[in-house]
Length: 106
Image 1 (spheres, rainbow, N blue to C red):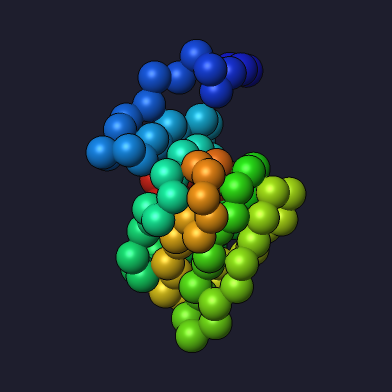
Image 2: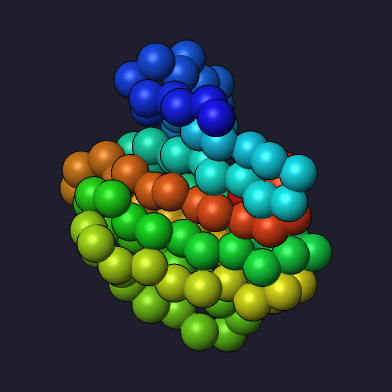
């Protein structure tokens, strides 16, 4: 069993966006994102199911044609092969956990 702390993972930066792969197995992965205000991911689809969980801040999530705001402690299920977009809609950085199955699609 491998145990990792988010503070021990270096991660990758894409401008001001920080991405850290927390845990990844054969069938699923868990990835952390830190998004500055206004940053996000444009609409895209994964050939898998996923969960987006907001650890902090405000996040606008678009799934298909539906757009919702989620905040700290809330999550949304992304159905299989459904288009999803994310955007930090607040004034502070947003922290997000994305869990996907199969691995490598978060």
